[in-house]
Length: 182
Image (tube, rainbow, N blue to C red):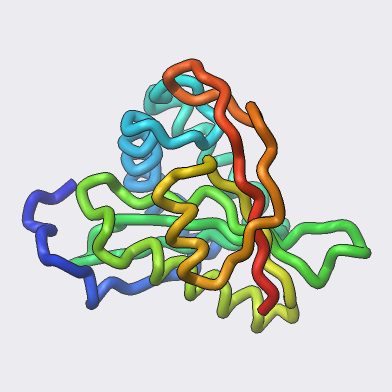
């Protein structure tokens, strides 16, 4: 991460909706963000910090869903540099076309608590609403800072599943499942 990114808030942060033909331009920075977040303890499917090859594979799997239209990938930029990302999963069975899932909200550890996650979430919600969705769902580690962010954005707790995911420290952690009507 560029050490010049130090303002209190990234108010000039922009969010882009990545199209499949733009994917190769963002996969490198997304790989760096994924690795940095897992190194800091993010639970996003890895038990330890992935090597670059595994992180690239993860993102190329996401790209397949972009091509099919079942997922949207948003990236936040500050001063031209990608600093965060979130995915909006739109694929659902026929009886679930009214909902979308927020997935893999990742903000580089060097720029956390500066409004990037909030901006990404607001844009994801706007895209879901424009796509005719009326319900957003997500899950997060119970007690994580993200849980309070989601509550501040109007998400409500549906319930907690104990020992849902294994952390990078090897412990089973509880997950909070949340929703928001939009």
